[in-house]
Length: 233
Image: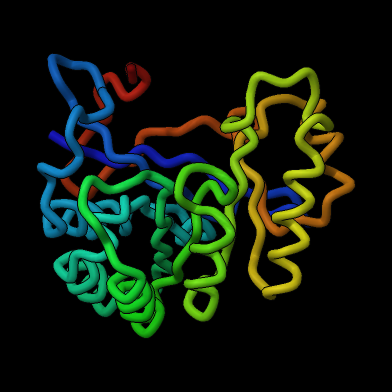
């Protein structure tokens, strides 16, 4: 059995939850685990789960984002499946987060741009996840600029560090680039009150992290009760 766990995403002003980043989890022997191989789940399995989860989301939390690795992102089956969900759940604001992970195959710029255009044309917002990490560097940012609505900067990717101030030049570079390109900017990995205090001086759009909210089990229409929803490894 698979379900989504959702980590709340917070607006900065006012500081309040406005939606979820969705993480797929699998129940094995009563424990919720990160699947060993996400590629074995079809686009329809994922979007069918989204259709069952969306009606149980509370009002004000109907902005969701789902991670796709680049192999999934360029796969037209994912675009078609999410487009179908969007038409069936028009109230749900769906964003697709393109991860920084590399592919084992050669993917051309043309394939990547065409995929991003398909999602954007369908009003499925494209987010560049973990900018400055992995493959989501400046070249990809510039390539996909017309179709991207948001950058996410993951401070946890730069640990260990003594203080968030240690990576502030890197963070500010991406923050300024987002402003220049008129993109939303989210900082994820906020894990302490000290982090929040430092980030209070950055006029970002959204925040995300364990200090604000850990991932929680999201029930579906099929769930009568939530069993062992606190047991996730």
